[in-house]
Amino acid sequence: MSTSNRENYHHGDLRTALLQRALAMLQTSPSLSLRGLAKEEGVSPTAVYRHFSDKQALESALAAHGYNQLHLKLQHTNATIERAEDLWRMAYTYVVWAQENQPLFSLMFTTECDPTAPERVKAVREITSFLASQIAHWYPKQYDEAFLSAIWSLVHGMATLAMQGKIFSPTPAIPAEQSAEELQEHVRTCWQALMATAK
Image (spheres, rainbow, N blue to C red):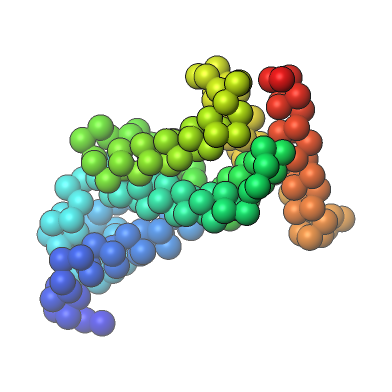
C-alpha cells in the first residue's frame, strides 16, 4: 500500500495498523521508536505522532493490548472452573500466555505504567479486579492482600522462570509436548502446595 493510501486510513484503522506493526516489530527487537514504526508501516512520522505522542504512549497502548488479551484468555479458562481445586488452571494459562507472548509480556511488566494513559490504567485495573474477585470467590477465608501477593508471586515467578528457560523448556532431549505436560504438572503441584499452607 502506498504512503498516500496509508495516510488516508480512518483514525481508528491507522492506530490499529500501527499497533499490529509494533507488535510484529517487538518480535525482533524490544527497542521501539516512533520513526522506526512510521518507516515500517509506510506512513509519515507525523501520522504516527497523531496517535502516539511519544514512545511511552506507544508502549502503554501495547501493554494495554497485552493485558486485555491475557484477560480474555483467563476469562475463557475461568469458565471451565467448577471448584477451588481447579483454579490452578488459570495460573497455567497465565504461564503459557507469557511463554507464547514473551516480548509483549516483558514490555507489559518492564515499562513504566503511565498514570495518564487511561487505556493502560483501565486494562490493568480490570484484569487485577477480575483475578482478585476469583480468589475472593474460591478462597473467601484466606482472602487478603498478603494472600493475593503470595499467589501473584508464585504465578508471575513461574511465568518468568519458564520464559527464561529455567524450568521445563523444550530441548533436543525433551520434546515440546513433554515439556508442556511437565510444566502443567509443575504449576498444578506448586499451586496445591501454596493452597495447602493457606488452610
